[in-house]
Length: 130
Image (tube, rainbow, N blue to C red; front, side, top):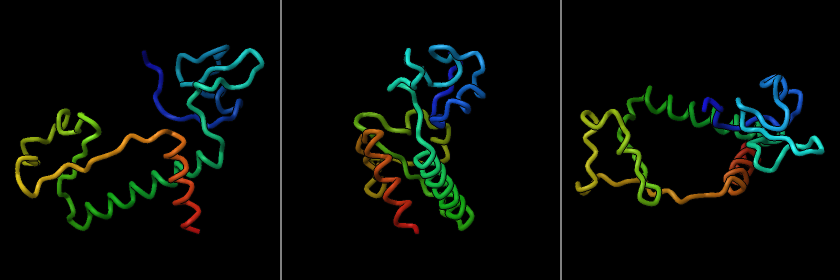
């Protein structure tokens, strides 16, 4: 399937501009409509304030990572989420030299969070910026 994976602004005009053939569900974006015309709960949509907060959070992260790289901070920092780690699909293993068996090489342990929890964290970060 070529359906995009991500978030869409919860605005019917935006949704229809992204997929002008949408009826009940889209083959292009993760949006479905209920019979009454409202967006289905399983649609991956955010209201404008949350959409902007996620966008700003992403831009802050890109900026922070870019500044780190520009200042020479390029150390590996892989994560582990339950039994999955990003080293298994990494194309840079040969140059990275991260080895969890070494004393100083440790995974960042991530905890699975719900979408609501992530949004609460992002909203809080955005509120504290002001």
